[in-house]
Length: 302
Image (tube, rainbow, N blue to C red; front, top):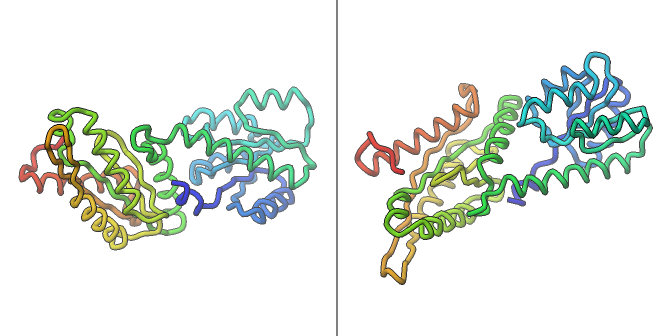
């Protein structure tokens, strides 16, 4: 997980109605290795937050149409956006204003004029805190993979980027065949062992840039950034061969369990209107394979 995360620069949205300040902040942050986006008003900021889902927002308090407090209030109305770290930028040094800002759930304050070293230190600290809490809240406890919450956040980011830059990415939905039968026959501890083994194989058989998640129950999802259907298909075939060669031996029961998965792939194209549609396409392809295996298209394996 760390390798995939390390390959992506943190994205920061800077919001200020003063063009000179935007230029200064953009230069400082770009030189520090961040991807920087800008907005000159509160309304523009809200629009760009929904589009970009940045890792952090540097937000000026004093703006003409919507001030920073109002922008943060709007962000707080959306549970998906409220967790984005916000650092308020202000020319005021009033303690009551700062306390009010913390009441809105901001992460930090910096007062104009500021030293670039202080700004970068506060941003790095806020990003580190966010990564720590994400590691806790977005990791599946059984497998150690990212969970469905992280998957939903990441696929939204990638979909928006693909639409904005006309880039590509692919998605695979992977369902463990017969897990319900394994649980019912040998117990949930054995079923959990199957899930952990498959999670390990997924991590070992995919590339560093690919993001492996446990979607829930007996389903996994793999996101392939900057990869078309052909490229992701090659990875999936290697993955399928590895899983199909795996066998779990239950020594106390003298039983062998042969692992099997059903997989569906979809890739982003301009005709796909949402990330939900992309997932549904991969999910449908997965069920086609599963039903073909069982010779009964009218049932779904539990």
